[in-house]
Image 1 (tube, helix red, strand yellow):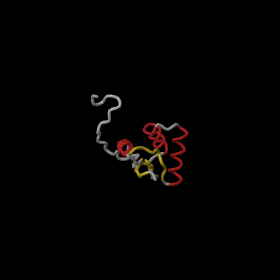
Image 2 (cartoon, helix red, strand yellow):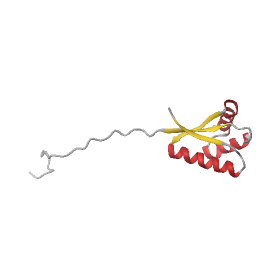
Image 3 (cartoon, helix red, strand yellow):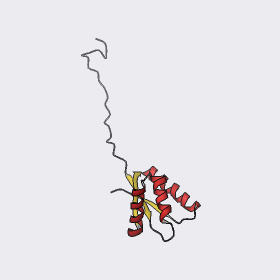
Image 4 (cartoon, helix red, strand yellow):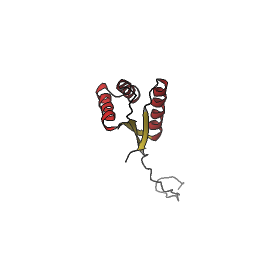
Length: 105
C-alpha cells in the first residue's frame, strides 16, 4: 500500500504545542489635577474612549472625587497608544492632564 493510503500508519514527528497564555491587559487611568476642566475630560472620554455622555460624566466625577479612575482596559499596545494620543491632545490644548497605564490584576 502507498504511504498516506487508508489503513497505513506512518511515523510522524509531533511537536508539543506550547500553551498560549492570554496577553495581559492594561487599565488606562485618568488622574485628577486642579487645572484640567471637567468639560475637557468628558470630551476626551467620549472622543478617545467612545464613552456615552453618562459614562463619561461618571468617570470624570470618580476622578474628581477619588483622585483617579479607570477609563478602559485594553491590550498593552492599545492602552499605551491611547495614553500617548490623549496626552498629546491635552498638551496641545494647554491641559496638564495625566493618564497612566497599569496591568490588570
